[in-house]
Image 1: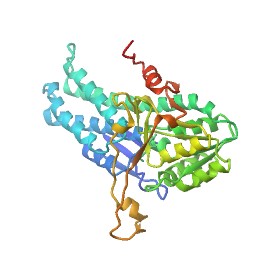
Image 2: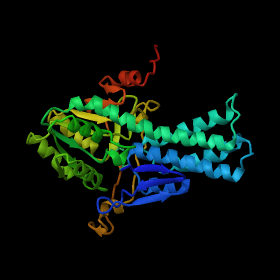
Image 3: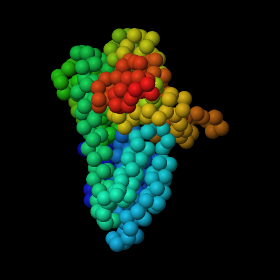
Length: 359
Ligand code: MRU
């Protein structure tokens, strides 16, 4: 089961809006349809939208190549692909993986068409771009397994593990980030019990995480978001693990709305709070979480539930899709390169292999 797949010239996506009621796919045959699927959350989760966008970019390259013809100068691909990249980037603002994947595809295009030794034809360039998108997908799966190997030791035997939103196979290339770490601890034979926040307003926890946990047979209990504090007080939760949409250079973490509340509650109850995220989620170009653009979604997601109105007409609504957890609440960040601990400003750069200003 893959949330995103490239089959020939079709990007096949699990329609996550319909889960858990039915498992259906949407087949995108051009980049505009991929962009729409990201925007309307057919596909969601930071790594998954990056992968979908990379495949969308490839479909855009195919279409452009057909229009230009096989004999055209490959450099003529660049301008139309910049526009396609900009359309794909305009879909959702917060998860950096989307921008990371598209920028990587654009850089690859540049290398292929401008390189001094480059004598590739247009069809050859397009084939190389297909390979790059597939590599982005494969590397994501490998990074998730790495995080699982590093993170599983942080989950004590017999622990109650709180998680928020969906960070599993559905949110990634496969396996998952935070849910991948939980999966790895379970596969290791640890007797754990997961508490999944339902994650209002779009219920990624209730609809998607609960579905993945049931499929895997991992013991789990679904709770509404406002129950987490009480369960912590009762001593049922020993560790909290969440994913991320963007981690800034100082270790601040943007993730699904409600994550900040979990982090603060965990601190008050002396419970470790871990974030699991691949390198593609770490954005060293941004100093702190204050600079992250937080997506604001439509009011109907809050005023209705399952299509039924639950609030009066005329009420004002706030619907930020993400929040930012300050780094001081984060016990550690589980990455594909190891677990990073404070001071994050130093250690995230080290993990990324970036030298400090002083060398
Ligand atoms: O709005 P969504 O469903 O795309 O938000 C997803 C999350 O916030 C996840 O926690 C995050 O992307 C990490 S997924 C591995």
